[in-house]
Length: 228
Ligand code: ADP
Ligand code: MG
Image 1: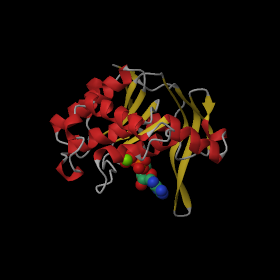
Image 2: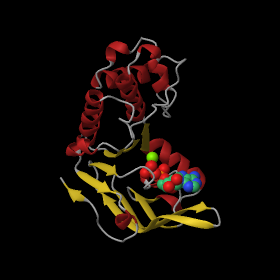
Image 3: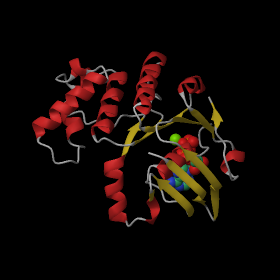
Image 4: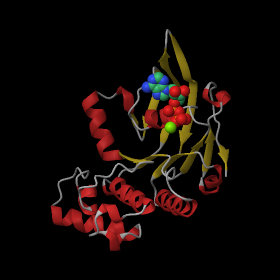
């Protein structure tokens, strides 16, 4: 999915004032790219992800996802758009411990296929992500890296065209972090747009583009990506 942000302004309430996070910010991401967003804690990485991911409406400016000016949609249409187009991956996985791995994925699949068809599809994704052998094991036997793979499977099962990843390797060791990034890279090469927020600058070698959210970048107009 192609993404375009045009002249975004975003601020949070800060006492009697407003804290400006983005001012006249524009940015564009082509389909099939892996983009990494870097910057110190509090610089606005999650805010930007949530704006792109359709969860946080900017005060003005436009967010174009594919051919859709997302925040021009009515709330109900936005919800539908998100459900079918965007997958979310977080540092803390947000899996449901009491459900089986397959059911964790199954409950987030919105389409009308039969359960057995869906299960078959889920198993093929688990296979691709290298956790097929864990399909019938309880979640409390999953390592951090395996849990994150399952969370990725959940995002993929919805056939999302955009993956929004907020510190997906934040609670993993270096080896698992690299494995997860390699999976996300492969997913982007299959034609999905993948946006990853990270603290870990060493992972940026996997990125097609790196967006470093300095104050200057957040408060100016134009292109800020550095090619890799
Ligand atoms: P990052 O993900 O880079 O750590 P965030 O996007 O979460 O940063 O936050 C950017 C800034 O906005 C921080 O200074 C944070 O304290 C502030 N902030 C985040 N969410 C809110 C909120 N709901 N209300 C007020 N301020 C917020
Ligand atoms: Mg954050």
